[in-house]
Structures are given as structure tokens and as C-alpha cells.
Image (cartoon, rainbow, N blue to C red; front, top):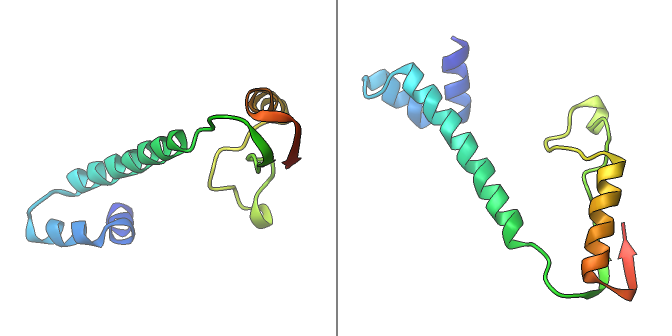
Length: 105
């Protein structure tokens, strides 16, 4: 029942295919898992497409700070340690900021 509820929530069109006998519940679950992976890959490619090139006078950055989340709920993305933020931001600034660049963090 939990599997069917998840399928109903995530992809109702698959539920219709299950009812018609076109696919099995396990095949629908595999398709859902594959679709989730495909979304993550697509978002990774979008991030790569936005990679910095050149030098900038002004940089606005909002790294994924180590927070608990909204009202104690987990954040919907991976957070970074302060050390990792410092290392990555430092490298980005060395590579892409003019000496008198304004940084809004």
C-alpha cells in the first residue's frame, strides 16, 4: 500500500498503467527512482552551466550554510561545513574577484 501511495503522489500516470496491467508495481517504483536520479543529474548539469568565467566587480553568494532547516525541518539540499564554504569561497574569490570587488555573502 505504501508503494502505491508513493506512486500515486509522485506519478499518477503510472498508477493508471499499473491498473491496466501495462507495468508492475516494481517497474513503476524503478521508473520513479530513475526519474529522481535523472532530475539530480539535470540539476548538476544546470549548476555546471552556471559556472563562473572571468573576473567580477560585485559577487553575491549564498552558500548552503550549516543550518537545521525551516522550523527544525531538514533542508531540501546538501549543506556545507563552514570550513568547506571558506575554502570554496576563498578559491572562487581568488579566481574571479577583482582586488576591489564587493562581496555580498
